[in-house]
Image 1 (cartoon, rainbow, N blue to C red):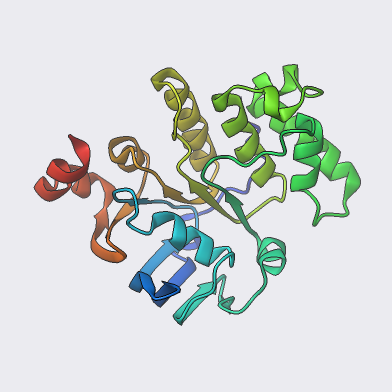
Image 2: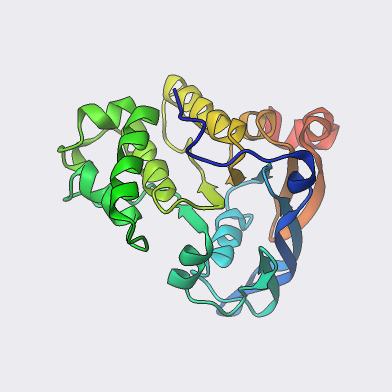
Length: 251
């Protein structure tokens, strides 16, 4: 069970605080426009799901927020600060962690080393050690294999490692990109239970996920991205009932 002290609890007033505000974002890859006039917000303590088909621009949106790709126009404001021109390592120090699509663990390093590298911005060594043990409480499978090479783990275990590694920086905002990708249904349910547990502690999450049904079930609000444009947004429970969303994404 997750330690409730690992992440801060928030009252109702704090939850109304806009932690992330993306304004008029345009992204180009060469001559191809990947994102056009993206406007979205994430309030402190929320889970916000970004859904859409393959190639819609979901991962690009997260990569723009974590400053892995540059924008042509627009602003990204995080915790009241314009981070549009920040470097990726600066964004991590400010409190944004990105668990990428495809997991991207360091295959030839152990689970323990992967987690320690997730805390590279921190110098509070005693607290880093304590947080390592907290991650092993959240992800007991990783605890059992802490000295095993990450590349020998199953897909589900690698996904758990990717999330745990991101949490080691103690982020205020966690960007999760396709956490269910390529996983068996039972493992997907386990991963989403972990995400729900994170949500219950008040961690703020922006979730990109092709499994729209699961993504909206655990979210407060959602956005629908189609061909680089945001076409729908609203309360997640309302989007689950929306006929257009049902036909396009819920099967």
